[in-house]
Length: 189
Image (cartoon, rainbow, N blue to C red; front, side, top):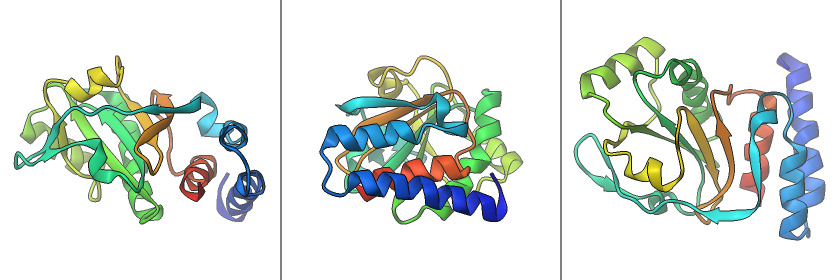
């Protein structure tokens, strides 16, 4: 979807969710998320109930320690990636655009998992035109292992309580109307 028809689609998908979400029980809200699995989001796995996210420490380039709980209170699009991963390179520009388009309701958190040299990360970001995404590191893959990430890229959607509500294995265009409608639905909870 693009242009005006894309906007109409986003409004329509969000309206479906909103109609189900107000006064609905969690099962109905999760059913609404499942109903939004269209287009780019058809590969998204929506959990029947939210599950606990990882608690492992990961770091910023300067060594500052982080945990996923640092973003509690926000909807988080958590992306595991690596410099050597071609599908990661393909989806990163959309994640970068999403960081601006969905702020402040949705926070995009990108974590380079495994061995990723700082110079390679800088080149990756420069080549892909990435300017908004954080550079966070999981060099021993502790968080990735704890969250069951076995391939890359993997994107996990966390609700405002820091729980995993959905997961995408493989690349996606996170700027499609379908993706933004799904994230808006999580943010509206």
